[in-house]
Length: 308
Ligand code: SF4
Image (cartoon, rainbow, N blue to C red):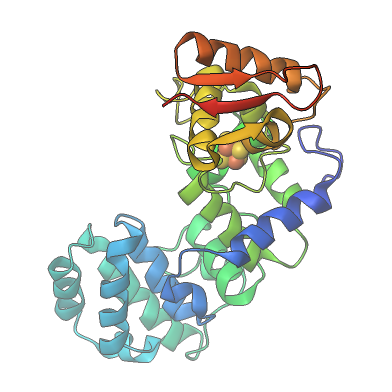
């Protein structure tokens, strides 16, 4: 762990807490997130390598109904396992063969008790470093920080981590709270899956890292796997959209109430403050979308509303 990673904010604890509580408040529920059974988790990992998570659920449940333990799977006919894979459109049949072989190894080489460390897990057929770490994290809460495409995109955007594998590894493990790989890896992968997608939905998904996020501040949402700016983003255009959608909801608002709803880091005298907001509103007024009512006698508040 390198506490000195320059990319990450100083108040790392707040960054961690914000993400974990966002995740715990409301996350997509997948049955394998409710279990700490290593076999069940391995099956979900292997299935989701090539198949959308939503479609994996039914296949995962059916697979475990049929072969509920490594011993049951080890006893199965290979042809049945491969047939199941094909029937459920789970991608390369080799994955089914490897999974079957891995179950046999657990029975024969580990007396039926799943290995727990990433190194041992990698001795199982078809289990590479990523899958081994995922199983160690989710089953035994004893893994390293996961660094997949989603996580890289999040780290690159939020903390301006350079596009370099070593830098991503360092930042990801620095950020992960000790001994909490299960919840942490789930949370950061969820962030990449539902908020910081290729086209991010920072506000709609209530991203908990907006106040620290470099991309959110600059409006540059490119990422290693998103080489050009997602089409609807681009800060000014995006902010104009936010003003309009906030005003749709509230009809009219004084600037002091509108500002924080447009940007979480709004501060009246700051870079994104009243002057910035007034500029944005002036543009929208020119376009005939918004009306701004100044206080008549110099007292009271300036109020913005949508032009109907
Ligand atoms: S604020 Fe937006 S860009 Fe930044 S981490 Fe959150 S979802 Fe990604």
